[in-house]
Length: 145
Image (cartoon, rainbow, N blue to C red; front, side, top):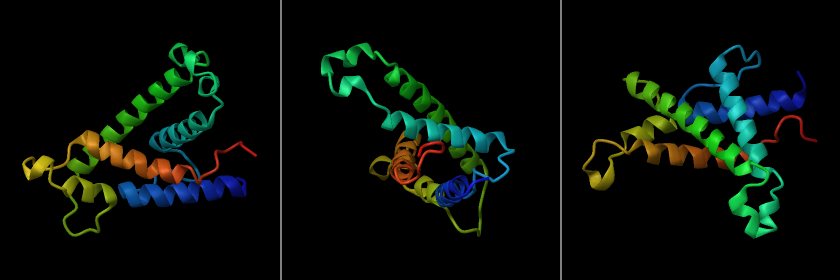
């Protein structure tokens, strides 16, 4: 394994441990969940940085000539499903005296105007998406030079 991959995995492990309380990327990547998460992040970063002709020729945007918007929507759906699973796993497991991660803190916050017992899932997912999207800007996509 090269140094770039090792550092990328270490950085992402740090971020996922802070956000979710567990590391998703391992050096062995034997876990399907790890591989899925890594693939989603790499694909999201690649799509966000891809050359899009409609950025320069705005009237082509509705046609999605390159299919980037379709790919991004498909990836977003997968990320949404992945985060739903992570949130449900967090809600199902109880951590009485353990230290809390970022997701535990978000799930413990009161909901709209303090009336619901916790924040809605879509708000939690949005905050997590912004958190790891900001971080992923600093992580170089594997295979790029």
